[in-house]
Image (cartoon, rainbow, N blue to C red; front, side, top):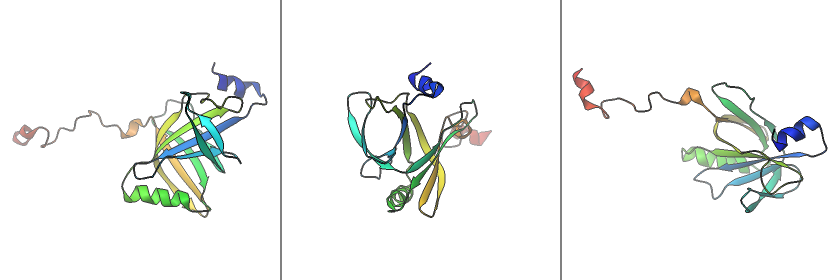
Length: 161
């Protein structure tokens, strides 16, 4: 049983801190966000730290199952319009937005309490001053099988069958 599972099962007084790191190639740098009221320096477990900006956000964690598509749903505050500008910038460049979610324990900010979730934004919407995004990982529905596409460009002899 991991330390995070022990904290969740014990009902103790150690808080779980959720953080998100959003990145796209067209952005000037990754956007590091933490759930809470104060900016926090959080570690990556390898000795390096970065300051995560505090934002009001809500997370819906993916369920632990063997479904074909695991989704992480989160909502961010967009009062200043920064999130919308960055999303519009990545949409204009036709680039995917990568999300890394890390969960920390308040008494150990050196590294995440469990391995990070890495996902890609699948969709979302803007309603008022809130942006809601859906990110997915373990997406078996979008995998092609077989991986190689046997078309006329790959196998020109198919034209003679």
